[in-house]
Length: 180
Image (cartoon, rainbow, N blue to C red; front, side, top):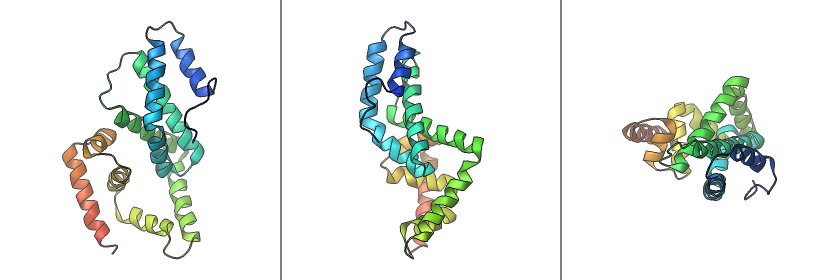
């Protein structure tokens, strides 16, 4: 994933086109979007890639998140936690894409097969065992926690209460202890 889209790329063309609508503060919005991209772009890409296992779709999800972020700034939407807001947009984009094309099952199967073709006891096999052991929500919580998100951020991303996140992570830990 590139550090920052090149000047004139599709991403910035779309953002500039939205800004040219005569809205005040457009240069500030672009600077804010660039700053957010530099701060959170790589983490969001890793999150998207971990969720969908498709590099192209992951890049699309990140790009869509930053386009929506810029549009939200232009329309005056108050965003309390930029990182959590962007992560939620990425995850929602991926869920929508999965629903439209029934891709979610194929990607999970492809990830399991890729791991199974590696050496016995490889990372793919372990991930398949973990996915089979945990509920989808528990797996999402563990995945976000491993990526470095805090409980409050996970709660905001998944639209849960922080106590629910703690409960899901605790249950997941107990289930994962059975893998030892």
